Length: 467
Image (cartoon, rainbow, N blue to C red; front, side, top):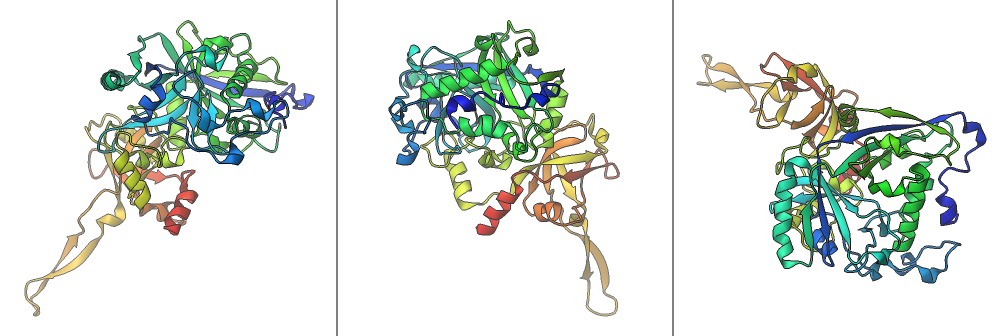
């Protein structure tokens, strides 16, 4: 299949789906700030601060080009040959269906403190999203999207690092840019395979040349934002949602879209007349977005976790494509992250949970995470005291209790909790789940915590057994 054919995105769908409807769900995310980074050292600068790999590395010979019938191989540049000091070529991604690739779509990453604890997660957008040619911009440019609560702190950190780099960093004024959540799913029965996989995900991950990545982006924007392409300043295809595409052809793909503040409502610029079906458009709330996110067990921003309290691998960054690299050069917090990964010593991970009687948590004030307990840890054991004669007394000693985990965040009955690894077998492999709970004010007021099997569990179990 040629790249041009791939980018027609579902136009070959049967006319019998013309009366069916796809679904667009969207929401404006109001708690985001943006840092603008530009200059010849921009990629190198970010590579030393974030967990993702921002600089190309050696690519095997058979991966240096991709075969596209419409183009001569000489038009493609090997990923390793990019000059990241000049031009606006997009963003390097280390892991794809055919090895490393180039994209103009954003990357999910993290910034750590010197001890390897998570300061914040972040999304890195190549900007502008659309340009005439890769060489039409003198230097690489990026927008870094973070939680507003940490924007000023990161602005100060970035500014201090620019003193030794050929980079300019500035915080975009509040209200200049908007961040939108989009969930797009296609009509039932349109395909036995989720259409996003062969028509977007797989071809996206095979692009090795910046001009082809730019062409790919133009086609995608024209498909969904026809006549409004240049109002989209950044686009993020969330890698945390792509695994769900394999479960059902009807599951949605999650996007993050950046626009200027002049876009009052993103549904006003959403326009896909070339597709053989219409869209049911639904505006949702940030509560709906959080609940969906927690259902799948991942976090987004400092509203979901406390700064510098968890490791990135405890939040399963090692199972998110291109979120953390284990073979790139030094970056802040790299030593502990690399050692944890190489030794395999990670005693707890975040999983989705369902909370029964969650209403009891409302109004609880705590400066720390709510602790999760297991009833089995409260077991008692007999202990004999005094002499060994007939007058010896027997007392019951309660085992020293320790929590089995912590609740990071929740929205109604859905939440994300960090649990000790020894809980996983009982929770996800045995018929009888553990009896976990949170004490809500008193020992008599309990919120039951029911772990849900995360998407990465089978991979984790295989890795654990192999180790």
